[in-house]
Image (cartoon, rainbow, N blue to C red; front, top):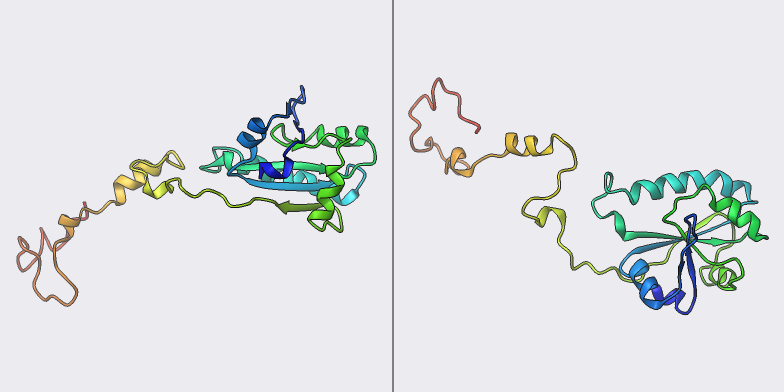
Length: 191
């Protein structure tokens, strides 16, 4: 996706407004990520109403507490503001991880035409093909717990195949070691 911004400058929405101007910086920030382009304007009432929803959505999807691979989302604000001052006012309350094009960059208008943006606000998913060569959480030996109690639940509900016995469906005989009454008083062991 960095190819879309090749030869351009993207700016981080932080207090220093750091510029990502080299191909390596753009590639590191945008390659193999889901890139959302947010077309909006500070003077648009619908954009003003939608921006807090998008901000909360973005914050949750880029927070390791909520999402396992939070770094795989990038958002680029494509300003449709008439003045640079309005753009800066709009970005003031938005997340610091957002990127945006400089106000004087003509790519802002070109992207709107390229993605057929007719009305504001608009969010466009602009990812090419994401590399899926990473392991899924269930493939890991010890996946990161999603809550404090998850390791306890895993231990509590884990069933050992030997404890279940080797009785197949329709087999009329109890597993070895269990007599007529089963294990102690007829109740089988779960753990």
